[in-house]
Every structure is written in C-alpha cells, then in structure tokens.
Length: 224
Ligand SMILES: [Zn+2]
Image 1 (cartoon, helix red, strand yellow):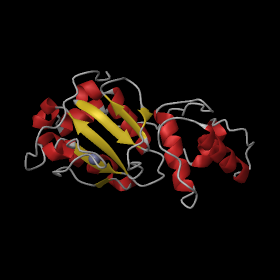
Image 2 (cartoon, rainbow, N blue to C red):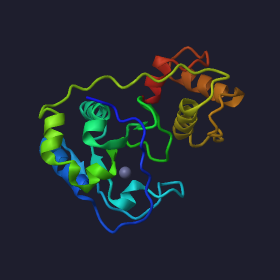
Image 3 (cartoon, rainbow, N blue to C red):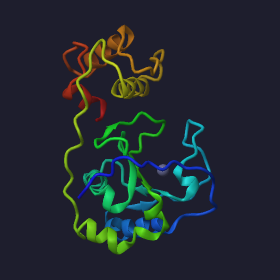
C-alpha cells in the first residue's frame, strides 16, 4: 500500500482509442460495483481538460470516468483506496466529489475545476499500467477483492477573511452556485470583504451564526 509520488505523465497527443489498462479498470469497476450502480462514463476522448487548453488524459485513453450514483456512501472509500495503493496500481491522479489527488503530493486537495465530479471518479493511469500492466487480477489483488469501508472525506479547512488558496476558490464557486441571481464573486482564491459578506448572508439564511467563519457546520450546510 504505497502512494505514488512524482513521475506525473501528462498527455501529449490524441492516440485514437482506449488503452488496455483503462479497459481493465472499467471492467473491474463494473464487475465489483455494478450492483451498486457503478457505470462506465467513458475512456477515450480527444479533447482538452474542460475549461482549459491542456490535453486531457482521455485523449491518450489513459483516463477512465467511473460513474458513481450521486450521494452514495461507498465510492469515496474506493477512490481513497485507489490513492493509497496508487503505486501498485500505476495511478497518478483521481478526481472525485470536489477533491483531487495527483502524484505531485500525497493528500487530497480541494478541486475547483468546472465539473464537481460528483457523479464519477476520474482516474488516470501511468503508461506502464495503461500498456497492460494494470490487469483485473492485479486490481483485485491490490483491492483485496473486498469492499473498502468509506473513510470520511478529508475535512475542508476553516476559512475566514484573509484566507487564500484552492479551498477559498471552491467556496467562492459554491456560493456563486447557491446564489446565481446575486452578482457573482470573483473566483480568485482570496477571501476578501465581498466573500465575507456573502458567507454571512448564507449563514444568516441557513440558521447558522453569521460570523463569516467557514467551519465544519458551514461547509456541511454548503453541501460538503
Ligand atoms: Zn475524466
């Protein structure tokens, strides 16, 4: 059980189809979790990362979108088990439920891309795994054929006036989704006075103490 750190392999060009390793991952996924509503949302797609110009790993057939029923209690545990065993499985990135792990660091981080990935896990394979190193047998062995218990999602950090970073971006984006008719906040990762006012507005309307501090109760009320 080892987390892959370093060696991230970006996509270079559209290759024309799915890799064997990604196909194996999807067939394992459907076999292991199909009865819980797991689906195949696709492997090969010659396109950039949505909202950007960088080529998606789907363009090399090295990423699989593993469909998950929205709001289920089990897929988080599977995605975290992927991360914890990423070296054995040859995985370099997982995105699920507004969180991303990639092999630049060990832990999950907030994900503020244009899709929240609440209905699927985006899983990227390193080349050795994509080229057939990742077999169904290997996945079964590493995942021990069992159903991992879902660990609680990593806690979102406490944010307040002056906070910065990806979690603030996630907060701003989420508040914009909550109040589409209000002037949108800049999604700049800077918790300034406008974000503070919007947080207090949200808290006041959600029966929370309107103190502008985004702690566990406020994150929960926002849907995290
Ligand atoms: Zn994807």
